[in-house]
Amino acid sequence: MFEDPIRRGLKLRCARCGEGKLFRSYLKFKDECAVCGQDFSVADTADGPAFFVGFLVMILFAPFYFILPMLPLPLPLMIGAWVVLLSMMIGLALFLLPPFKAVLFNLQVRNRAEEAKWESTGKHGTPPNNWKP
Image (cartoon, rainbow, N blue to C red; front, side):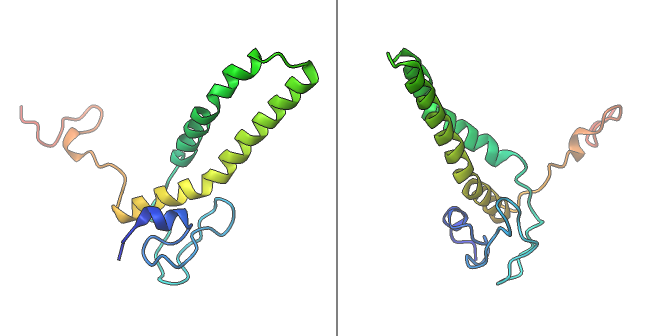
């Protein structure tokens, strides 16, 4: 049933069947899979994909931020190099967001991830369930 959520996520396909498309627009999930009926509202990736993509892009481009200012280029070429570098960063981030979001979503569906439940720790001002005076 759930053979490979990462591969299916990279293909932007449903975690259950691997056939249906996940997105109806750039980063907007469909309500359910058109092939198998998997409900796509069962998981929420929140800002996880943006976090991972942002760090990956910064790691890849950070050396250029240190090297570029040290190059003896005339000002017009330096400005052009910065424009190209920033354009590449933004383009790569926008390109990577959908697959990262799909992979994280498929992993959540595969592992039946849900919101944390804290019954044993109690709430603010009340003792935990397992606490005995």
